[in-house]
Amino acid sequence: MYGLLGMRGGGTGRVYFRDVRVPAENIIGGEHRGALVFNQMMLPERMTSAAGTLGGARAALEIAARYSNQRRAFGQKIRRFEGVSFKVADSITLLDAARALVETAARAVDSGDEPGRVRRLVSEAKKFATDTGWQVINHAMQIMGGIGYTNVYPIERLLRDARLAMIWTGTNEIMNLLIQHEYYEELGMAAPVRDVEADAPDAEVEGEKVFE
Image (cartoon, rainbow, N blue to C red; front, side, top):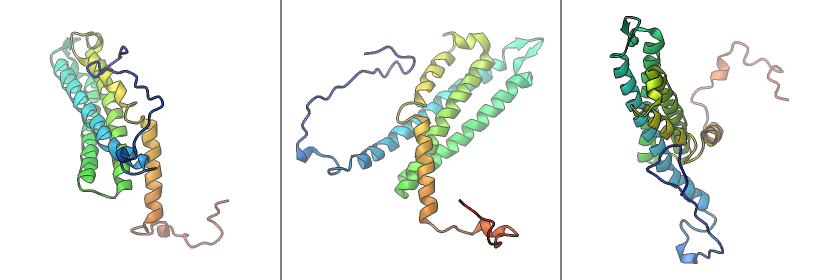
């Protein structure tokens, strides 16, 4: 067992496989199909990372917003300062946008949408929601000031917990790889709904579109 920055309720450790033999009847999904099994397994993992991080961020923002309506400085509540209130506005906007994307991805999973599109949406949701959660909790701590850095409020714990979400179940850099890959695949498979390139006045001028 190792010490943890966050997610201390989860625990972590090493698992070693040495000279392991797996009987043929125990193979899941068929031989050489491990990637497909892994991709399917990662869908609920990544959706959980996305939704869970948003839950922590929403809690942090609520704590900070309530605090800003009580804490006074320079003769007024600190929510009256734009440096504070604009952080609240930015945070709630990001949270609502991330919630919408997570719901869209969840609906695609539940409806059995095309696998590539599902992978793209889930990857987008995981990346955007966890990045958003980290940013919103940072805003919450900034609003709270020094007291947010202590264990008098749970902001510091929420911040530590959120950091892992951008790493586990596939780093957000890996999510970028998946997103762009699946999007290029979509562009290659389907004809455009409408050829927007043709809208340019000189779209038909020959010799101008040079790709080498």
